[in-house]
Image (spheres, one colour):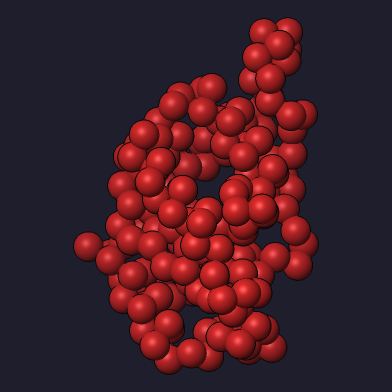
Length: 175
């Protein structure tokens, strides 16, 4: 199984990147690619830009990466209750190639935040809209209070219940 994983954040110190990297390490595959959204930075999407310049190469590369994967892991950062602008822009450009951005791939959606809400608002939005973009959502999990539940030195969840939930969720990709 070729697994594609990324945090929907462009922060170099993203806790969602730590979470999705850990989640990917729990999958029973050696074929994991972890993307950095900074590699896909583009001008802010607008129909005028698309009409004048076409779709940026980075959007096509991102779309192709999804197409080459067997399954996808995403961890969403929450900015003001919604997607990060970095993710939203990449998603908007990519959806202009094909609205079926996720290309009928099985997807696990995660989210975390420092607070007790665990970025549940953005996770709910992502899960709810996913079928419109051809994502087969296998499951989702919000990790609240990241710094209490994740050991950054060991790069792993230190909450046994959450760790078990995450492992069971990732194992669903193998079916």
